[in-house]
Amino acid sequence: MLTDLTPQPADKILALMQMFREDTRDEKIDLGVGVYKNAKGVTPVMRAVKAAEQRLVEEQMTKAYTSLAGDPAFSAAMRGLILGDADDASRIAAIATPGGTGAIRQGLELMRYADENATIWVSTPTWPNHPSIIKYLGVPTKPYRYFDNATRGVDFGGIMADLKAVKRGDLVLLHGCCHNPTGANLTPEQWGQVADLLSETGAVPFIDIAYQGFGDGLQEDAFGPRLLMQRMPEMILAASCSKNFGVYRERTGLLMAVAPNEKAKAEAQATLNFLNRQNYSFPPDHGARVVQMILDDPTLRADWETELEDVRTGMLALREQLAAELRQRTNSDQFDFIAKHRGMFSRLGISEEKVIQLREEHGIYMIGDSRMNIAGLNAETVPKLAEAIVAVGVD
Ligand code: LMR
Image 1 (cartoon, rainbow, N blue to C red):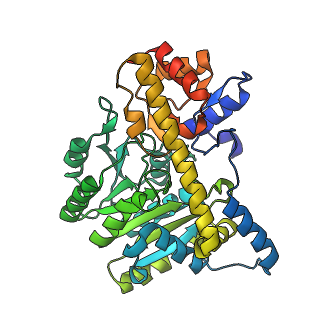
Image 2 (cartoon, helix red, strand yellow):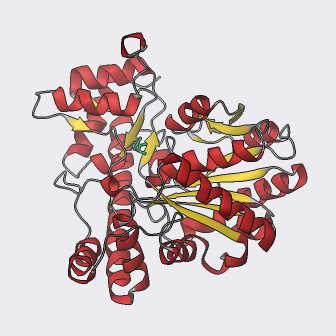
């Protein structure tokens, strides 16, 4: 059996992580995997996470199973964080999942279970693991245009033209904020137009929100999910706590299924519990409990929000600095889009050959589609990156 296995294509992001580790150059710069790093290149445990973990060690008296859906207090706290005033417990079924990827996987499983012919529409480009999981599960899929390489902004005309062909019951995968890999995002007005289009076509939004708080702020970044919650009868929402709580390895995520009424919600909840049972029984609890403790404790929450805001503004400052360095070196505003993008990533829009050149000649690692992780930079490495970009030249 095992000798008959065929090798799977390597995940581009994880393969790049490995290449970076193996590079012995001191000056190398990692702009690959989406992990936040501070100016010292460290991914810190956030203060509130440390404090909550310490409290948990003291107070936790059992590690017996929770429920198949995970701790309901975690779901409630996350619903509040993401949906704010738009939260409506009577319509939302939810399960804790192993990270945001687990939530995406379970959302796709739910979709397939409900209607195996429904198509999921996916932005071009998107996080590479989206199409990979979709293909693995055999879920029908279609692409929609998203990014305009000429402006390095959203191709809104393309989005709207392509999504007109969406059928009733199809799903449309949308990044809740901080689009991965481009960094180009919908404006509130554009979210409104997408909501109109989805309402007209009868399609169901499938939101992936993994970077709330990394873009324009915790509330601002949730604009799209909140609007769609109010406007749409049904919605799937996959959330990750990996980045905004920095609990990457704890695998902490939540899947929500928004139903039109309480009866449909109860059925969705039973199905989600069943899907958790089939895939891994009980979801991991440690990260979820820590997140819930932080969100429900005013002191811990205030400290977490302060630290998250520092992370966000730090990344914005690096964006501004890089755009300014490039403006000065090229005597043009062609890179100003870097300061306008939001979240961890920006797609530079250069060819794969130039990405390879940056890696081989300058020790700068970014994903092959020229996605760079802004948090991999610091004030000293920004000028080096700008110099290298100018040296390899722009298409
Ligand atoms: C990324 O896009 O780099 C992150 O979401 C990490 C991952 O698992 O790919």
